[in-house]
Image (cartoon, rainbow, N blue to C red; front, side, top):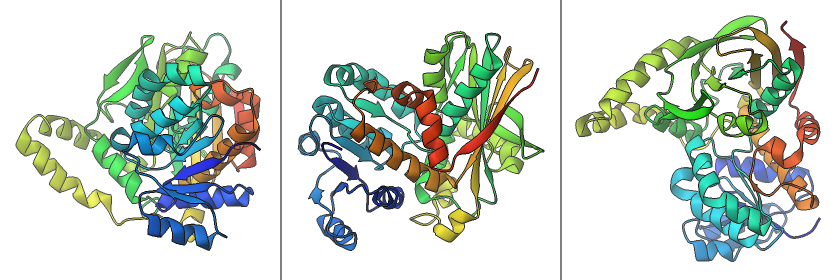
Length: 371
């Protein structure tokens, strides 16, 4: 293993889980962040890790963190507000990059801002490399390959087995809160279009039961059409709370109307503030009560005949994210034959390596034809 690995955000909830996962793999990252006291305390608790003070909004500060071949991990969000300097610093330095974002708009902008530079410097940039959205990308690749040349549409659904009522972090809640009014990138008619969140509902079969999910988005809409140009439609849905899918659809429609006016935006902010909840996230016991379940259905047309279906199941959404990032960081640090640029997980590592890596962190599943 050459170079060093730098972790931004280790004092936060997701960053702390990533740090634990990395240490279990024998990785000893350099911790970075704004609060020197907190960093020093955390580094000491873990055997005296290296640590450095850095401001995620200061590009000059960030450029001092990494050099060519290093790995820079960030869990500091919201990414559309705080993420671009970190990504730019990695691209400019030729350092590899991983983040934990669930913000598809950020990933879309990252492609425009950093892809060409990363290709020049040899930086492999892996945004959204966690539960959002590695499992869906993997499941969809497997489903399209299984379905064959007739596949024209893919529907991906994200679910959880077990209750998430107390199992969401504040960061996830805030992302959901802001997502009520943000446009959803959707691949349809061989192009990206923006749709309203929850403007469409779809049923999936999860453990033998039909569960409803609402239209959201994922990096599947950005990366799958590059791998499979024949795809007319790529849709991503969230089914964490199936019984709330129709109410969320109505709330999203009302929110889209409200944000057109200043008073409506203010009122919406006040009404949704309780969604943020308390800081932090679910502890180990709470995470053990839930598992992630992802479905990908490949069809011959949008709303057409299903040709193949893939189910993947693994640890809780936060455990899975931490383990995937740790696996990806180790892979980036030890391999020199990877595809540079802002890329998806399959493009970066290859389908077989990604499938084996996901199985290693507990994400496994089954594939079957639907013909």
